Amino acid sequence: MNHPITIAGGGLAGLALANRLASEGIDVELFEKRRYPFHRVCGEFISGVSDAVIETLGVGDCLHDAQLIRSMAWFLRDRVVLEQKLPQPALGISRYTLDARLAEVAQESGATIRVGEAFKDRMDEGVVWATGKRLDQKSSWLGLSAHFENTNVDRLEMYCGPVGYLGMSPVEDGRVNVTGLFRKEARFKGHGVELLFSYIEANGCLDLLERLGKGEFVEDSFAAIAGFEFGAQQRGGFVIGDRSLLIPPFAGNGMSMALEAAAQASRLLVQFANGEISWVDARRQYLAFQRASFSLRMNMAARLHPLLLSSFGLRMLSLLSTSGMLPTQRLFNALR
Image 1 (tube, helix red, strand yellow):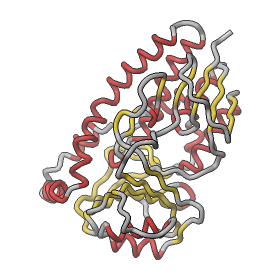
Image 2 (cartoon, helix red, strand yellow):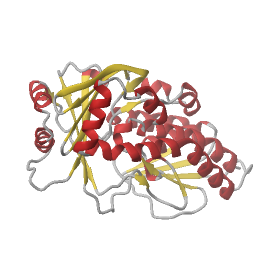
Image 3 (cartoon, helix red, strand yellow):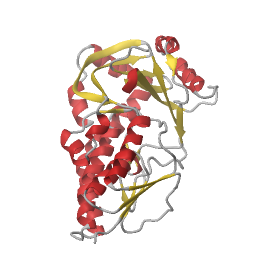
């Protein structure tokens, strides 16, 4: 008889982990306080994850209609400073669609998915925390996200300006996801997508604002989040995904890290559930994996992030890019 596993949180890491464990015959129960499907503040593209990770987790079918993204463009306000092919294609898919599919697949594999229920705060043996970024911190950050139709975007686009940065990525059904990270400022007014438009305008991205205005906002797709900081999140317990490490969104690696974390955690938790290793050993080995796999990209992201949020940093990056001296391939690899 195996040891049951409880997963607190039904985001990407938690759901992928639940599916993998259930497919191995492990008794899995997952708690998610919201009900699928729902929108999240997320860049909604997967970049850098290996086929082996997808296969290990058994989630490939959930990505069947993900958009294959082969190129990117970087803008300072409305000025293009870099256009190039991605070293590796990225996959664009909304969390609204993907999370709901993963929940269904995990249930079909035998996992118990309890939606509308928040898990009680325990660090017991056999409990994995995957509840996403901590939102109880004093923070100046604000994340805003919305979907649009009829924008004719088929690449990743990133826009930097004086109040933050935002990205656009194509997702399924011909839609585009627009997600921004901004410094909270009381002077920006509006509710829902109008608040997003206010920040885009203040960021000097007027051409982008016009493009979005010619498209169609997808009703009920707006999402917002605040009260978070980047870096290490919760310490103690068996913690994966954004609940463990939150990488700045410009790195474009958050979804990939969630899947990589779930794949490695699943290997160790199968051994624990089958009585092959102790809970202490499972957690210790996972932390060792996390340090070896994520430390470089987290450190690199932490160093680059302030440059994207300062006038000097943006001027320097723009100069390096236009002169062909920006080591984009090396940066791409370091952030993965």
